[in-house]
Every structure is written in C-alpha cells, then in structure tokens.
Picture 1 (cartoon, rainbow, N blue to C red):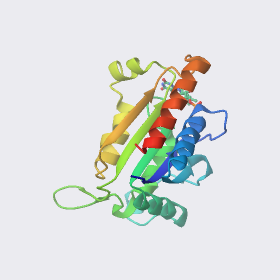
Picture 2 (tube, rainbow, N blue to C red):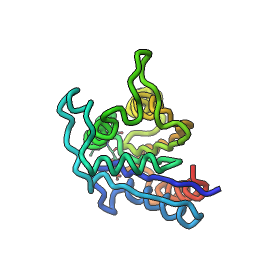
Picture 3 (spheres, rainbow, N blue to C red):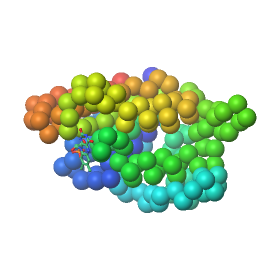
Picture 4 (tube, rainbow, N blue to C red):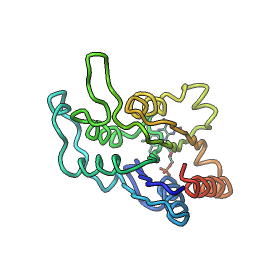
Length: 192
Ligand SMILES: Cc1cc2nc3c(=O)[nH]c(=O)nc-3n(C[C@H](O)[C@H](O)[C@H](O)COP(=O)(O)O)c2cc1C
C-alpha cells in the first residue's frame, strides 16, 4: 500500500555534504521509486521566526508556516531528520515546531488537557550525533529525542513513532555511512 509521506529535514544547514541531507535524499528517492507520494521540506529554506510568547502561540502562524501545517495534514506518515545539537533538536527546528503548533494545531485545548488532533498518522525520527548511540541512550536517556517524540508528536496523536538513532557519525567512516544510507532506502521503500 502506498502512502502520502512528508519528509522534514530539520537541519539548519541543508548543504549536500551534511549527512542529514544525504539520509533525507536516500529516503525520499527510494520512497518515490516505490510509488509513495512524497513532499520534502528543508528547514534551511524556511523563514522560522522565534515565537514571541503565549499571545502569539494562541494566534495562527504566518502563511509559510500554514503551508507546513497543510503538508502535515496531508501526510499519512511524517519523517523528521535532525542532527543532535547540544543534546537536543537544533534551535531552528524547535522554533519551527513552536510556530507549527500555534492556535491549537495538533493539540486542541480542553479543560481535561490537550486533545490530539493528528491521530491516524505515523512518524519516524532520524537523529544523527557525534557520540555513540549507546551513550545517548544510557548516559543521556535520549532526552533530546524523547522531548520531540513524547512532548510534541505523541501529544498530537502520532503513532507509532519509530526512531533511528545514528551515533558516531564522524567516526563510522564511509562504510558505516553507506550502511545507514542503505537502511534509509529500505525504510523509504517500505514507507515506514
Ligand atoms: C552546534 C553543534 C552542537 C552539537 N552537539 C552535539 C551533542 O550534544 N552531542 C553529540 O553527540 N553531537 C553533537 N554535535 C555533532 C552533530 O550531532 C553531528 O556533527 C551531526 O549529527 C552530523 O550530521 P550532519 O553531517 O548532518 O550535520 C554537535 C554539532 C554541532 C554543530
């Protein structure tokens, strides 16, 4: 079964020499070749102002961000790729998410807490980092990843949220990178 897939490269630097860019391209090309419909957003191309406060969070975002919202609503599966920067998502990606989830998009307010608005969609988070993946899990509790998984996408109702943690990117060498690119192509083909 083919899917509508949104791929968000959440890297402030989308130059092709960055590994994140190659991973995103591998996924997108394989998914398209397998017949999935794919839209790609490069964070580096977006103007994402920092949110000024709650007053702004309660009003709709500017048109370029509304276009991102439409892509999210269109998608059945969302893939977010990002590098770990200082233990978390790059600030520009967090800024985009704060803009996207304005005015109840993704989570509506109710007296009993947030009501998920994006149910029926699945996600994959792909994070690259300098440290070994095992250190990220055991020493840091993968908090930079879990904040996005549980604190944002999970609250919005996306499920399942699968994860690819790519550690030691500067150390794994050409062979290691080729293996991850092949894995991204497999995932893209399957649309998961
Ligand atoms: C500003 C900055 C902060 C970083 N912080 C971390 C970090 O906290 N932990 C870590 O393991 N790697 C860290 N790194 C390494 C990056 O995660 C790594 O270079 C990146 O994932 C490689 O992917 P890319 O080629 O797509 O940029 C940092 C790199 C930069 C530029």
